[in-house]
Image (tube, rainbow, N blue to C red; front, top):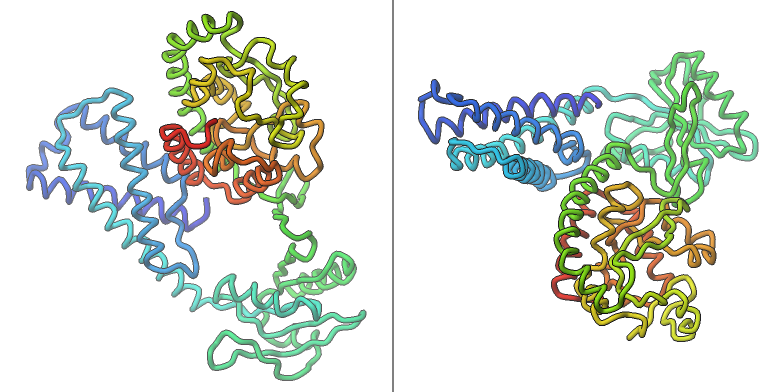
Length: 469
Protein backbone atom coordinates (compact mmCIF):
# COMPACT_ATOMS: atom_id res chain seq x y z
CA UNK A 1 0.00 0.00 0.00
CA UNK A 2 1.67 3.25 -1.18
CA UNK A 3 1.48 6.63 0.49
CA UNK A 4 -1.53 7.72 -1.58
CA UNK A 5 -3.51 4.68 -0.52
CA UNK A 6 -2.53 5.21 3.12
CA UNK A 7 -3.61 8.86 2.91
CA UNK A 8 -6.88 7.83 1.27
CA UNK A 9 -7.46 5.24 3.98
CA UNK A 10 -7.00 7.75 6.80
CA UNK A 11 -9.10 10.41 5.08
CA UNK A 12 -11.88 7.90 4.36
CA UNK A 13 -12.03 6.92 8.01
CA UNK A 14 -12.22 10.61 8.91
CA UNK A 15 -14.97 11.35 6.35
CA UNK A 16 -17.02 8.36 7.54
CA UNK A 17 -16.87 9.58 11.14
CA UNK A 18 -17.78 13.13 10.13
CA UNK A 19 -20.54 11.87 7.82
CA UNK A 20 -22.06 9.79 10.60
CA UNK A 21 -21.96 12.69 13.06
CA UNK A 22 -23.60 15.07 10.57
CA UNK A 23 -26.21 12.44 9.64
CA UNK A 24 -26.99 11.85 13.32
CA UNK A 25 -27.27 15.59 13.91
CA UNK A 26 -29.67 15.94 10.97
CA UNK A 27 -31.82 13.02 12.14
CA UNK A 28 -31.81 13.32 15.95
CA UNK A 29 -30.38 16.74 16.73
CA UNK A 30 -27.91 17.09 19.60
CA UNK A 31 -29.09 14.03 21.56
CA UNK A 32 -25.53 12.59 21.51
CA UNK A 33 -25.90 10.43 24.63
CA UNK A 34 -28.22 7.99 22.80
CA UNK A 35 -25.96 7.58 19.77
CA UNK A 36 -24.83 4.09 20.85
CA UNK A 37 -27.29 3.02 23.51
CA UNK A 38 -27.73 -0.60 22.39
CA UNK A 39 -25.38 -3.47 21.59
CA UNK A 40 -26.82 -3.79 18.09
CA UNK A 41 -25.66 -0.25 17.31
CA UNK A 42 -22.05 -1.28 17.89
CA UNK A 43 -22.57 -4.37 15.72
CA UNK A 44 -23.92 -2.25 12.87
CA UNK A 45 -20.98 0.15 13.21
CA UNK A 46 -18.59 -2.82 13.05
CA UNK A 47 -20.34 -4.09 9.92
CA UNK A 48 -20.02 -0.66 8.33
CA UNK A 49 -16.28 -0.57 9.04
CA UNK A 50 -15.83 -4.14 7.75
CA UNK A 51 -17.71 -3.19 4.57
CA UNK A 52 -15.42 -0.21 4.13
CA UNK A 53 -12.32 -2.42 4.47
CA UNK A 54 -13.62 -4.85 1.85
CA UNK A 55 -14.37 -2.12 -0.67
CA UNK A 56 -11.14 -0.23 -0.02
CA UNK A 57 -8.83 -3.25 -0.17
CA UNK A 58 -10.38 -5.20 -3.02
CA UNK A 59 -11.83 -2.51 -5.24
CA UNK A 60 -9.46 0.48 -5.45
CA UNK A 61 -11.80 2.80 -7.33
CA UNK A 62 -10.61 5.83 -5.39
CA UNK A 63 -6.98 6.18 -6.40
CA UNK A 64 -6.54 9.67 -7.89
CA UNK A 65 -5.35 9.43 -11.48
CA UNK A 66 -3.21 11.86 -13.41
CA UNK A 67 -4.90 13.48 -16.35
CA UNK A 68 -8.40 12.59 -15.12
CA UNK A 69 -11.00 15.29 -14.68
CA UNK A 70 -13.52 16.15 -11.99
CA UNK A 71 -16.17 13.96 -13.58
CA UNK A 72 -13.91 10.92 -13.20
CA UNK A 73 -13.33 11.65 -9.51
CA UNK A 74 -17.06 12.21 -9.04
CA UNK A 75 -17.68 8.77 -10.56
CA UNK A 76 -15.02 7.22 -8.30
CA UNK A 77 -16.68 8.70 -5.21
CA UNK A 78 -20.11 7.50 -6.34
CA UNK A 79 -18.94 3.95 -7.12
CA UNK A 80 -17.09 3.67 -3.83
CA UNK A 81 -20.15 4.63 -1.80
CA UNK A 82 -22.44 2.51 -3.97
CA UNK A 83 -20.37 -0.62 -3.32
CA UNK A 84 -20.08 0.33 0.34
CA UNK A 85 -23.86 0.62 0.58
CA UNK A 86 -24.46 -2.68 -1.27
CA UNK A 87 -22.01 -4.71 0.84
CA UNK A 88 -23.17 -3.10 4.10
CA UNK A 89 -26.87 -3.73 3.53
CA UNK A 90 -26.32 -7.21 2.08
CA UNK A 91 -24.13 -8.14 5.05
CA UNK A 92 -26.75 -7.02 7.55
CA UNK A 93 -29.42 -8.98 5.70
CA UNK A 94 -27.42 -12.21 5.40
CA UNK A 95 -26.29 -12.02 9.04
CA UNK A 96 -29.89 -11.38 10.18
CA UNK A 97 -28.81 -8.40 12.24
CA UNK A 98 -31.66 -6.17 13.32
CA UNK A 99 -31.18 -2.63 14.53
CA UNK A 100 -33.39 0.05 15.96
CA UNK A 101 -31.34 2.72 14.21
CA UNK A 102 -33.25 4.90 11.78
CA UNK A 103 -32.92 3.92 8.12
CA UNK A 104 -33.06 7.61 7.31
CA UNK A 105 -29.90 8.04 9.39
CA UNK A 106 -27.96 5.73 7.06
CA UNK A 107 -29.44 7.29 3.93
CA UNK A 108 -28.18 10.63 5.20
CA UNK A 109 -24.83 9.01 6.00
CA UNK A 110 -24.21 7.60 2.53
CA UNK A 111 -25.28 10.81 0.78
CA UNK A 112 -23.03 12.95 2.98
CA UNK A 113 -20.17 10.46 2.71
CA UNK A 114 -20.43 10.56 -1.10
CA UNK A 115 -20.03 14.35 -1.09
CA UNK A 116 -17.15 14.31 1.41
CA UNK A 117 -15.40 11.48 -0.47
CA UNK A 118 -15.51 13.55 -3.64
CA UNK A 119 -14.05 16.60 -1.88
CA UNK A 120 -11.29 14.39 -0.44
CA UNK A 121 -10.39 13.15 -3.91
CA UNK A 122 -10.34 16.71 -5.22
CA UNK A 123 -8.13 17.81 -2.32
CA UNK A 124 -5.67 14.92 -2.84
CA UNK A 125 -5.56 15.52 -6.59
CA UNK A 126 -4.73 19.21 -6.18
CA UNK A 127 -2.23 18.49 -3.42
CA UNK A 128 -0.48 15.96 -5.65
CA UNK A 129 -0.36 18.39 -8.57
CA UNK A 130 1.05 21.14 -6.35
CA UNK A 131 3.68 18.75 -4.99
CA UNK A 132 4.73 17.67 -8.49
CA UNK A 133 4.94 21.28 -9.67
CA UNK A 134 7.24 22.18 -6.77
CA UNK A 135 9.46 19.07 -7.03
CA UNK A 136 10.54 18.92 -10.67
CA UNK A 137 13.43 16.59 -11.48
CA UNK A 138 15.92 17.27 -14.25
CA UNK A 139 16.13 14.21 -16.46
CA UNK A 140 18.45 12.91 -19.18
CA UNK A 141 17.28 10.43 -21.84
CA UNK A 142 19.37 7.75 -23.56
CA UNK A 143 17.64 6.44 -26.70
CA UNK A 144 17.98 5.37 -30.34
CA UNK A 145 17.07 7.69 -33.23
CA UNK A 146 14.01 5.57 -34.06
CA UNK A 147 12.49 5.66 -30.57
CA UNK A 148 13.62 8.96 -29.07
CA UNK A 149 10.38 10.82 -29.83
CA UNK A 150 8.24 7.97 -28.49
CA UNK A 151 10.40 7.84 -25.36
CA UNK A 152 9.94 11.57 -24.79
CA UNK A 153 6.20 11.21 -25.28
CA UNK A 154 6.04 8.47 -22.65
CA UNK A 155 8.03 10.54 -20.16
CA UNK A 156 5.64 13.44 -20.65
CA UNK A 157 2.68 11.17 -19.83
CA UNK A 158 4.39 9.99 -16.63
CA UNK A 159 3.84 13.34 -14.99
CA UNK A 160 5.02 16.92 -14.90
CA UNK A 161 7.79 16.19 -12.40
CA UNK A 162 10.19 14.95 -15.10
CA UNK A 163 11.83 17.86 -16.91
CA UNK A 164 14.02 16.49 -19.73
CA UNK A 165 17.12 18.67 -20.11
CA UNK A 166 19.35 16.44 -22.24
CA UNK A 167 19.19 13.63 -24.81
CA UNK A 168 21.92 11.15 -25.71
CA UNK A 169 21.05 9.59 -29.08
CA UNK A 170 22.93 6.36 -29.87
CA UNK A 171 23.44 5.69 -33.57
CA UNK A 172 25.85 3.29 -35.32
CA UNK A 173 28.02 2.74 -32.29
CA UNK A 174 28.39 6.43 -31.41
CA UNK A 175 26.19 8.93 -29.65
CA UNK A 176 25.18 12.55 -30.08
CA UNK A 177 24.26 14.52 -26.97
CA UNK A 178 22.03 17.60 -27.07
CA UNK A 179 20.82 20.04 -24.48
CA UNK A 180 17.12 20.71 -24.77
CA UNK A 181 14.71 23.22 -23.30
CA UNK A 182 10.96 23.68 -23.14
CA UNK A 183 9.17 26.09 -25.42
CA UNK A 184 6.65 28.65 -24.22
CA UNK A 185 3.89 26.02 -24.11
CA UNK A 186 5.95 24.08 -21.60
CA UNK A 187 5.53 20.64 -23.18
CA UNK A 188 7.57 20.53 -26.41
CA UNK A 189 11.28 19.76 -26.32
CA UNK A 190 13.62 21.82 -28.51
CA UNK A 191 17.32 20.93 -29.13
CA UNK A 192 19.59 23.86 -28.34
CA UNK A 193 23.26 22.94 -28.73
CA UNK A 194 25.61 19.96 -28.76
CA UNK A 195 27.74 19.52 -25.70
CA UNK A 196 29.85 16.87 -24.04
CA UNK A 197 27.67 14.35 -22.20
CA UNK A 198 30.10 13.73 -19.34
CA UNK A 199 30.57 17.45 -18.77
CA UNK A 200 26.82 17.97 -18.76
CA UNK A 201 26.19 15.11 -16.31
CA UNK A 202 28.97 16.32 -14.03
CA UNK A 203 28.36 20.08 -14.06
CA UNK A 204 24.61 20.44 -14.58
CA UNK A 205 21.70 19.57 -12.31
CA UNK A 206 20.67 16.01 -13.23
CA UNK A 207 18.40 14.04 -10.91
CA UNK A 208 17.80 10.91 -12.95
CA UNK A 209 18.02 9.33 -16.38
CA UNK A 210 15.73 7.21 -18.53
CA UNK A 211 17.40 4.54 -20.66
CA UNK A 212 15.45 3.28 -23.68
CA UNK A 213 17.91 1.11 -25.59
CA UNK A 214 17.45 -2.41 -27.04
CA UNK A 215 18.87 -5.53 -25.45
CA UNK A 216 21.48 -5.68 -28.23
CA UNK A 217 23.16 -2.67 -26.61
CA UNK A 218 23.48 -4.40 -23.25
CA UNK A 219 27.14 -3.44 -22.82
CA UNK A 220 26.28 0.24 -23.43
CA UNK A 221 23.42 0.01 -20.96
CA UNK A 222 25.68 -1.43 -18.27
CA UNK A 223 28.28 1.28 -18.88
CA UNK A 224 25.66 4.04 -18.71
CA UNK A 225 24.16 2.69 -15.48
CA UNK A 226 27.63 2.31 -13.96
CA UNK A 227 28.53 5.90 -14.90
CA UNK A 228 25.27 7.28 -13.53
CA UNK A 229 25.64 5.21 -10.37
CA UNK A 230 29.13 6.62 -9.81
CA UNK A 231 27.63 10.12 -9.91
CA UNK A 232 24.71 9.21 -7.64
CA UNK A 233 22.20 9.75 -10.44
CA UNK A 234 19.18 7.45 -10.43
CA UNK A 235 18.63 5.51 -13.66
CA UNK A 236 15.39 4.02 -15.00
CA UNK A 237 15.59 1.24 -17.60
CA UNK A 238 12.47 1.32 -19.79
CA UNK A 239 11.49 -2.31 -20.30
CA UNK A 240 9.44 -1.74 -23.45
CA UNK A 241 12.72 -1.77 -25.37
CA UNK A 242 13.13 -5.43 -24.41
CA UNK A 243 9.67 -6.86 -25.00
CA UNK A 244 7.55 -7.84 -27.96
CA UNK A 245 4.38 -6.02 -28.91
CA UNK A 246 1.20 -6.60 -26.88
CA UNK A 247 3.15 -8.06 -23.94
CA UNK A 248 3.19 -6.67 -20.40
CA UNK A 249 6.27 -6.81 -18.19
CA UNK A 250 6.89 -6.35 -14.48
CA UNK A 251 9.93 -6.59 -12.23
CA UNK A 252 9.38 -9.02 -9.35
CA UNK A 253 11.31 -10.66 -6.53
CA UNK A 254 11.16 -14.49 -6.45
CA UNK A 255 12.98 -15.47 -3.29
CA UNK A 256 16.26 -13.58 -3.49
CA UNK A 257 16.18 -13.39 -7.29
CA UNK A 258 15.05 -10.31 -9.18
CA UNK A 259 13.24 -11.29 -12.38
CA UNK A 260 11.17 -9.66 -15.11
CA UNK A 261 7.81 -11.28 -15.76
CA UNK A 262 6.42 -11.16 -19.31
CA UNK A 263 2.80 -11.96 -20.13
CA UNK A 264 0.01 -10.72 -22.41
CA UNK A 265 -1.77 -9.52 -19.26
CA UNK A 266 -0.38 -9.45 -15.71
CA UNK A 267 -3.01 -9.50 -12.96
CA UNK A 268 -2.56 -8.16 -9.45
CA UNK A 269 -2.90 -10.68 -6.65
CA UNK A 270 -5.47 -8.43 -4.96
CA UNK A 271 -7.59 -8.45 -8.14
CA UNK A 272 -7.51 -12.25 -8.38
CA UNK A 273 -8.31 -12.50 -4.67
CA UNK A 274 -11.35 -10.27 -5.15
CA UNK A 275 -12.46 -12.44 -8.07
CA UNK A 276 -12.07 -15.57 -5.91
CA UNK A 277 -14.12 -13.97 -3.10
CA UNK A 278 -16.88 -13.26 -5.62
CA UNK A 279 -16.65 -16.88 -6.81
CA UNK A 280 -16.99 -18.24 -3.28
CA UNK A 281 -20.00 -16.07 -2.47
CA UNK A 282 -21.65 -16.79 -5.81
CA UNK A 283 -20.71 -20.46 -5.59
CA UNK A 284 -22.38 -20.84 -2.19
CA UNK A 285 -25.60 -19.22 -3.41
CA UNK A 286 -25.49 -21.22 -6.65
CA UNK A 287 -24.95 -24.55 -4.86
CA UNK A 288 -27.95 -23.93 -2.62
CA UNK A 289 -30.01 -23.00 -5.68
CA UNK A 290 -28.77 -26.13 -7.49
CA UNK A 291 -29.84 -28.41 -4.63
CA UNK A 292 -33.29 -26.82 -4.32
CA UNK A 293 -34.02 -26.90 -8.06
CA UNK A 294 -32.41 -30.33 -8.34
CA UNK A 295 -35.10 -31.77 -6.06
CA UNK A 296 -37.60 -31.12 -8.86
CA UNK A 297 -35.37 -31.54 -11.91
CA UNK A 298 -33.69 -34.83 -10.94
CA UNK A 299 -36.85 -36.98 -11.04
CA UNK A 300 -37.86 -35.44 -14.38
CA UNK A 301 -34.44 -36.22 -15.89
CA UNK A 302 -34.58 -39.83 -14.69
CA UNK A 303 -38.17 -40.44 -15.82
CA UNK A 304 -37.43 -38.99 -19.26
CA UNK A 305 -34.36 -41.22 -19.73
CA UNK A 306 -33.28 -43.52 -16.88
CA UNK A 307 -29.63 -43.06 -16.00
CA UNK A 308 -27.31 -40.70 -14.12
CA UNK A 309 -28.81 -37.37 -13.07
CA UNK A 310 -25.45 -35.59 -13.17
CA UNK A 311 -23.30 -35.64 -16.30
CA UNK A 312 -19.58 -35.51 -15.46
CA UNK A 313 -17.08 -34.86 -18.23
CA UNK A 314 -13.35 -34.26 -18.40
CA UNK A 315 -12.72 -30.64 -19.35
CA UNK A 316 -9.56 -28.58 -19.65
CA UNK A 317 -9.09 -25.65 -17.29
CA UNK A 318 -6.54 -22.96 -16.55
CA UNK A 319 -3.33 -23.40 -18.58
CA UNK A 320 -4.29 -26.95 -19.56
CA UNK A 321 -5.28 -28.40 -16.16
CA UNK A 322 -7.84 -31.23 -16.53
CA UNK A 323 -10.86 -31.36 -14.22
CA UNK A 324 -14.30 -32.96 -13.98
CA UNK A 325 -17.10 -30.58 -14.95
CA UNK A 326 -20.62 -31.30 -13.74
CA UNK A 327 -23.98 -30.56 -15.37
CA UNK A 328 -27.53 -31.84 -15.10
CA UNK A 329 -27.76 -34.47 -17.83
CA UNK A 330 -29.69 -33.08 -20.79
CA UNK A 331 -28.86 -35.83 -23.33
CA UNK A 332 -29.53 -39.51 -23.68
CA UNK A 333 -27.04 -41.80 -21.96
CA UNK A 334 -25.47 -42.83 -25.30
CA UNK A 335 -24.89 -39.23 -26.42
CA UNK A 336 -21.08 -39.39 -26.44
CA UNK A 337 -21.09 -42.61 -28.49
CA UNK A 338 -23.37 -41.00 -31.10
CA UNK A 339 -21.31 -37.81 -31.37
CA UNK A 340 -18.94 -39.21 -34.02
CA UNK A 341 -21.75 -39.97 -36.47
CA UNK A 342 -23.14 -36.45 -36.05
CA UNK A 343 -19.86 -34.61 -36.69
CA UNK A 344 -20.84 -34.14 -40.34
CA UNK A 345 -23.65 -31.87 -39.15
CA UNK A 346 -21.42 -29.81 -36.86
CA UNK A 347 -22.10 -26.10 -37.37
CA UNK A 348 -18.61 -25.24 -36.12
CA UNK A 349 -15.16 -26.67 -36.79
CA UNK A 350 -13.71 -29.59 -34.83
CA UNK A 351 -12.61 -27.30 -32.00
CA UNK A 352 -16.22 -27.06 -30.81
CA UNK A 353 -19.40 -29.01 -31.48
CA UNK A 354 -22.77 -27.34 -31.99
CA UNK A 355 -25.74 -28.70 -33.84
CA UNK A 356 -29.22 -27.30 -34.23
CA UNK A 357 -31.95 -29.75 -33.16
CA UNK A 358 -29.40 -32.19 -31.77
CA UNK A 359 -31.25 -35.57 -31.64
CA UNK A 360 -29.29 -36.59 -28.55
CA UNK A 361 -31.08 -34.01 -26.37
CA UNK A 362 -33.98 -35.32 -24.30
CA UNK A 363 -37.33 -33.56 -23.90
CA UNK A 364 -36.44 -32.45 -20.37
CA UNK A 365 -32.96 -31.60 -21.65
CA UNK A 366 -34.38 -29.06 -24.10
CA UNK A 367 -36.14 -27.28 -21.24
CA UNK A 368 -33.21 -27.21 -18.81
CA UNK A 369 -30.90 -26.05 -21.61
CA UNK A 370 -33.31 -23.30 -22.65
CA UNK A 371 -33.47 -22.08 -19.06
CA UNK A 372 -29.77 -22.82 -18.37
CA UNK A 373 -30.78 -25.03 -15.42
CA UNK A 374 -28.38 -27.69 -16.74
CA UNK A 375 -25.47 -25.40 -15.81
CA UNK A 376 -26.32 -25.20 -12.09
CA UNK A 377 -24.07 -28.10 -10.91
CA UNK A 378 -21.09 -26.11 -12.21
CA UNK A 379 -21.43 -23.94 -9.11
CA UNK A 380 -19.81 -26.86 -7.26
CA UNK A 381 -16.88 -26.56 -9.70
CA UNK A 382 -16.73 -22.85 -8.87
CA UNK A 383 -16.77 -23.51 -5.15
CA UNK A 384 -14.04 -26.14 -5.57
CA UNK A 385 -11.80 -23.72 -7.47
CA UNK A 386 -11.57 -25.44 -10.86
CA UNK A 387 -13.93 -22.89 -12.43
CA UNK A 388 -14.99 -19.28 -11.94
CA UNK A 389 -18.37 -17.58 -12.20
CA UNK A 390 -17.11 -15.66 -15.22
CA UNK A 391 -14.46 -16.88 -17.61
CA UNK A 392 -13.99 -18.71 -20.90
CA UNK A 393 -15.78 -21.89 -21.98
CA UNK A 394 -13.76 -24.97 -20.88
CA UNK A 395 -12.97 -27.21 -23.89
CA UNK A 396 -13.28 -30.98 -23.89
CA UNK A 397 -10.09 -33.04 -23.99
CA UNK A 398 -10.76 -33.83 -27.66
CA UNK A 399 -11.19 -30.17 -28.58
CA UNK A 400 -8.09 -29.19 -26.62
CA UNK A 401 -6.00 -31.78 -28.50
CA UNK A 402 -6.71 -29.88 -31.74
CA UNK A 403 -5.77 -26.44 -30.41
CA UNK A 404 -3.25 -24.26 -32.22
CA UNK A 405 -0.74 -22.39 -30.01
CA UNK A 406 -2.72 -19.13 -30.08
CA UNK A 407 -5.88 -20.93 -28.92
CA UNK A 408 -4.33 -21.91 -25.59
CA UNK A 409 -4.19 -18.31 -24.39
CA UNK A 410 -7.96 -18.42 -23.86
CA UNK A 411 -7.17 -20.80 -20.97
CA UNK A 412 -4.85 -18.35 -19.17
CA UNK A 413 -7.70 -17.62 -16.72
CA UNK A 414 -10.01 -20.12 -15.04
CA UNK A 415 -12.91 -21.19 -17.25
CA UNK A 416 -16.31 -19.86 -16.25
CA UNK A 417 -19.98 -20.75 -16.15
CA UNK A 418 -20.63 -17.67 -18.24
CA UNK A 419 -18.43 -15.29 -20.19
CA UNK A 420 -18.03 -12.74 -22.94
CA UNK A 421 -18.92 -15.32 -25.60
CA UNK A 422 -22.20 -16.27 -23.96
CA UNK A 423 -23.47 -12.72 -23.37
CA UNK A 424 -22.41 -11.66 -26.86
CA UNK A 425 -24.76 -14.20 -28.43
CA UNK A 426 -24.07 -17.29 -26.35
CA UNK A 427 -24.30 -20.37 -28.63
CA UNK A 428 -25.52 -18.25 -31.58
CA UNK A 429 -21.87 -17.68 -32.58
CA UNK A 430 -20.65 -20.40 -34.95
CA UNK A 431 -17.09 -19.28 -35.75
CA UNK A 432 -14.61 -20.63 -33.19
CA UNK A 433 -12.04 -17.95 -34.05
CA UNK A 434 -14.69 -15.38 -33.14
CA UNK A 435 -15.14 -17.18 -29.82
CA UNK A 436 -11.37 -16.95 -29.25
CA UNK A 437 -11.40 -13.22 -30.05
CA UNK A 438 -14.17 -12.61 -27.52
CA UNK A 439 -12.36 -14.70 -24.90
CA UNK A 440 -9.10 -12.79 -25.41
CA UNK A 441 -11.01 -9.51 -25.31
CA UNK A 442 -12.34 -10.56 -21.91
CA UNK A 443 -8.90 -11.64 -20.63
CA UNK A 444 -7.06 -8.55 -21.88
CA UNK A 445 -9.72 -6.18 -20.56
CA UNK A 446 -10.60 -8.07 -17.39
CA UNK A 447 -11.64 -6.16 -14.30
CA UNK A 448 -13.83 -6.88 -11.29
CA UNK A 449 -16.48 -4.56 -12.69
CA UNK A 450 -16.45 -6.43 -16.02
CA UNK A 451 -17.29 -9.67 -14.19
CA UNK A 452 -20.20 -7.95 -12.43
CA UNK A 453 -21.40 -6.56 -15.78
CA UNK A 454 -21.23 -9.98 -17.47
CA UNK A 455 -23.11 -11.60 -14.57
CA UNK A 456 -25.96 -9.09 -14.93
CA UNK A 457 -25.96 -9.55 -18.72
CA UNK A 458 -26.08 -13.32 -18.22
CA UNK A 459 -29.14 -13.05 -15.98
CA UNK A 460 -30.85 -10.93 -18.64
CA UNK A 461 -29.84 -13.42 -21.33
CA UNK A 462 -31.21 -16.37 -19.35
CA UNK A 463 -34.50 -14.57 -18.60
CA UNK A 464 -35.05 -13.69 -22.27
CA UNK A 465 -33.70 -17.04 -23.52
CA UNK A 466 -31.46 -15.26 -26.03
CA UNK A 467 -28.96 -17.54 -27.71
CA UNK A 468 -29.56 -20.50 -25.41
CA UNK A 469 -30.56 -22.98 -28.07
